[in-house]
Structure formats: structure tokens, C-alpha cells
Amino acid sequence: RARDRVPSPMTIVDLGAVRAAAVILASASPRRVEILNTVLGIDARVIPSTFEENLDKTAMHPHEYVQRTAHGKALEVYRRLVRMGEAPPRLVIGADTVVVADGCVLEKPADEAAAALMLSSLSGRSHEVCTGVSLIYGQAPRGPGAESPSNNAGEGAPQHEHNFVEVTAVDFCELSTQAIERYI
Image 1 (cartoon, one colour):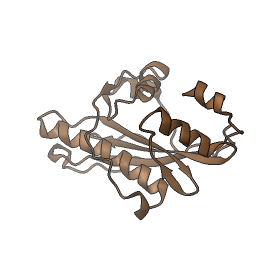
Image 2 (tube, rainbow, N blue to C red; image 1 turned 45 degrees about the horizontal axis):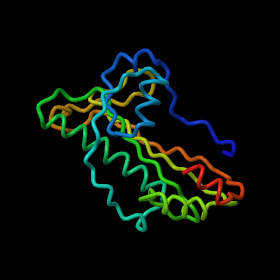
Image 3 (cartoon, one colour; image 1 turned 180 degrees about the horizontal axis):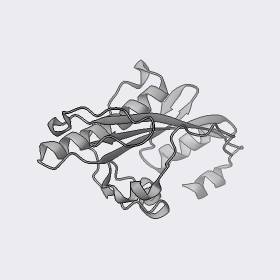
Image 4 (cartoon, rainbow, N blue to C red; image 1 turned 120 degrees about the vertical axis):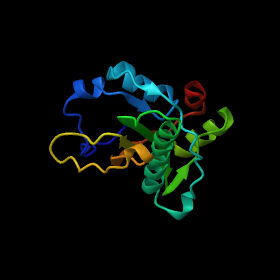
């Protein structure tokens, strides 16, 4: 079960304005596409990032790792589109999610056996699910608190960025081998 969490400082004030913008999702994650397009009705254009997810996890806090990875994904897509001659995208969204147990980032399981091992290691324990999000704007957002735009968005530099990390504390009950097998 997820424990209570502090609400995010990021809220969508005008979902209609977001839906009208040309939003690009720098991910091929089916779940992220579903959230944006089906749940929120945004109709994001999906352009998977080619950012190499090879940052040294041991050199930084897991929250910094996930935020820097999300930022790298969004910035790679933004810059690629500008290099290809497209107008600077209005909004590129990058995200990365990891599981953190005992302060260590757990990698995505490579196969079902690795997934079973990971779930078994989390059985009866607490861990965190951390999602870094990076919003990169080719046009500065309008409204209260919006930062002043720069003049070099056409050169591959975004006009505004907003980066944050959401953390959910998760408590697992004891999982039987059968429950793990059914889940996988």
C-alpha cells in the first residue's frame, strides 16, 4: 500500500491550455502514453528519447539520478527536433521511474526470473518508487511565477525548464511464491 504523501508543488492550472499545446512525450512507455492521452486527454506526440541511461547511480542520490535521467531524455528530444529544422517544441515531457530499496536504485528486471527475484527481495519490506519529471518549454509558460524567456530557443536551448521528483513510499506485505508468479 502507498503511504500518505505530500501533494506535488506542480499542479495543472488550466488543463485546456495544456491540451491545446503541442505536447511531446519523450518516452515510449505505454503507461505514460495512457496517462497523458487517455486519462488526461492531452493527445501527446510520442517521440522516444535516445538518451543513454548510463549515469553513475553510485555517484549521486537516487532522487538526483532519476531527475537527471528524466531531464536528459526531454532535452535530447527537444534538441533533436530543433536540429532537424522543426520549430522549438512548445512542451517536451521527459520522465524516469526507479525503485529504491535501502538507498540503492534497483534496475528494471531483464526477464521474468529477475522480476521474481526483485519482488521476492521487496517482500515484507518498504521501498520507494521515484519518478523524475522534466518539462522543457520552447515557449515560456505564461502566468504567475513564469520565468522570463531567453532569446536562444531556436538554437536548441529551451526557454524554460521545470524539473521535479515525485516519491511514493510503498510497503509490501509478505508475498508468496504463488503471488509473485501470478503477478509476473
